[in-house]
Amino acid sequence: MSDEYIVEMRRITKRFPGIIANDDISISVKRGEIFALLGENGAGKSTLMSMLFGMYEPDEGEIFVRGQKVSLSSSNAAAALNIGMVHQHFKLIHNYTIAENIILGIEPLKKWMGLFPYVDIKNAGEKIRELSRSYGLEVDPSLRIDDVNVSTQQRVEILKMLYRQAEILIFDEPTAVLTPQEIEFLLGVMRELRNKGKTIILITHKLEEIKQIADRCAILRRGKLVKVLSVKDASTQEMANLMVGRVVSFTREKSPPRFGETVLEVQDLSVRNEHKFEVVKNVSFSIRRGEIFAVAGVSGNGQVELADTLAGLLKPWKGRIILKGKNITAEKIRPRTEAGISYIPEDRQRYGVVLDFNLGENLSIKNYYWPPLSEHGVLSDEAIRNYAGDLILRYDIRSGQGVKTLTRSMSGGNQQKAIVAREISLNPDLMIFVQPTRGLDIGAIENIQRQILDERDKGKAVLLISLELDEVMNLADTIGVIFKGELRNISPAGKLSTGEVGEYMMGVRS
Ligand SMILES: Nc1ncnc2c1ncn2[C@@H]1O[C@H](COP(=O)(O)OP(=O)(O)OP(=O)(O)O)[C@@H](O)[C@H]1O
Ligand SMILES: [Mg+2]
Image 1 (cartoon, protein in one colour):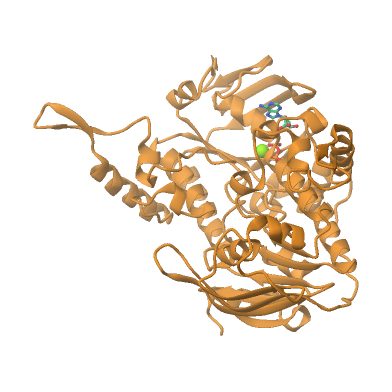
Image 2 (cartoon, protein in one colour):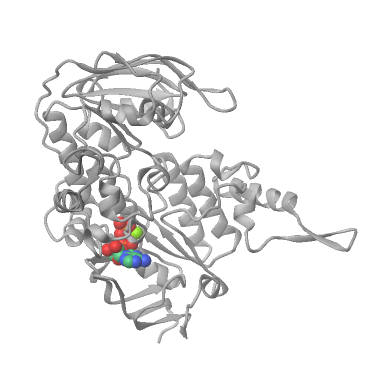
């Protein structure tokens, strides 16, 4: 046992019903390095790190921390060894404030009149502000989690770990929900942490991030360790091929568009948030059959509110939404689904799936009452099983027990694949997709983007809202840039360079 390694996981095996999530995996992490974990959706990355964080115990194998064999039976045990983790799915309490979430479990106490203990939330708020300023992760500690967007929630998770002075920091896909600018910031934060002697384990699907920041990278495939490599000696293509087990293509073949009649027309739409602030301002655009209309923009510029309003989750303040010539501005969600709208929301675990339903139920949750899944009001278990089983195959949704798998137990990327599969197969005229490939591995992204292009070629109208400029440039026929709630510069995709779109997104060009 050398002192060089701060963490050693030896011959770790973890089984779940129907699947070996980790199969005899050994990794050693050096003190002060950034160690990346790469692998397809469901390869076993989160499971492996959850064991280091004490959330599960391995069925077989041993874990050593600072040379000592340890038994990590709870996350408190891990925290006592200065191990911290930012989870892939936030573990925040929604009706608590940011400050309350960050100090939860280690509340600073003060005594009133020297007698009665109370939580010194004011002091904690100050400390949090200071932390967030010094790492560039600005938050307002007094806001409730319910009232902040996904990217802010992610920041809270990061701050929570920093507040606890963890030394071994596990980040499970921390950048999946951040903007390119925020990612740059976070990578800067990680470098800073490494310079201060901390050890970082980073799970990510973004190869450029690994290239930019990691020292070594372990590649997992279907529960097994494929290879550990030194990042500076490996190309991104090489890493991609190793993780997927085949050659991966980064560019999409796209046929020339054939536009048909108008499917969606948005007229002068404005949306106000609860503080009466106009988050979507006088937005007008239309989408035709066979067209992918992409809204590019930095997160927080109104794109989520625009999508929620079109899907019926939010009410507009003014303006009209016309679907296939019919005014649906006042319709609720279900009639919109029936009229031919499908929706992939930004926050998949809140609005995308019911975690306590099984995979088959989630795949049929929007159309279970349509034939052939129901006949004369009677659900057909067999039809649902076949329907869901077919989607599982076509979209390569990986899980332990197929249709019967509890959705909560599925890996994040596979939950996302399930949502995409469900929404595309509703066979809608209009698909509203917010970040459809978020959290997916590069092989899965290739598959999903291919499917979206196929739908467009079949004459569907697609509204794509993405923070990934690459995705916008790869898929869009028409691009509009949203900035401070205004949709500007609507132009055919070929007219704009990636650089120009980027500048519009930042508001430096108008
Ligand atoms: N609590 C659980 N119960 C049952 N099965 C589980 C549980 N946790 C994970 N699994 C299964 O173990 C496998 C590995 O899941 P894991 O979450 O580790 O994947 P991952 O590599 O993190 O994938 P992703 O990139 O999608 O997040 C998956 O097939 C998943 O369905
Ligand atoms: Mg995971």
